[in-house]
Image 1 (cartoon, rainbow, N blue to C red):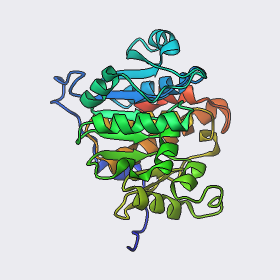
Image 2 (cartoon, helix red, strand yellow):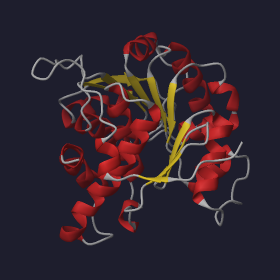
Image 3 (tube, helix red, strand yellow):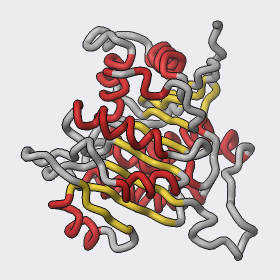
Length: 295
């Protein structure tokens, strides 16, 4: 199938593609703006869930639920008082156990968007967890797969088979290589080609380092991203922004384009204060809402 020419993501393009607002202006409650559930973390990486969760609220989601290892749940509930936090069973090494409780599956079935992967660190447990959660998610819900959830998908590509979900994948180049079955061999390939291949193979929208691709071959390019976005936790922020936009009712390609643009421009706004490579992922959070609001 021939691919389309990339369209550049600009404020003008986004203004002509407005995000859903939920209820009428002035009457929307938090449920109208959508519920996001973020599943991830480990005993040593609960911060990834914090970043993704807060990013989803900054993107306009109305309610936030976080699911992390039992040993970190209390601390995270204090760090993010806006969220409902539940603890998950964990392995002896501190990873989220794949045999998740019914309460989590109930939350997944009620959420408007579910982000899975930030901070997870055990591939076998993640495969089990991902299968159970995807079975529980509503057919019309949005799903963001990030980090180890992408690794789980690369191990078992059938995890998305037959599901009518609104899915966005947020891989880095290494993760994209695993999804294509060519780990370590795509570093010199064109990013657009990689994104298109992943989108087609996984039947999902992909955002890869500023390139957004759909399974049908539509492509968008965000050209203002800089090296500063290559910092620890930055991908968690992107995954959270996309999840928040999906929860508001955006289509997967719209959420990916708006989220990719907001992520990049938020980094631009920080550069004058911290330099091109000196800002932190948590500082992106405070720029997201303003960036989205000034389109």
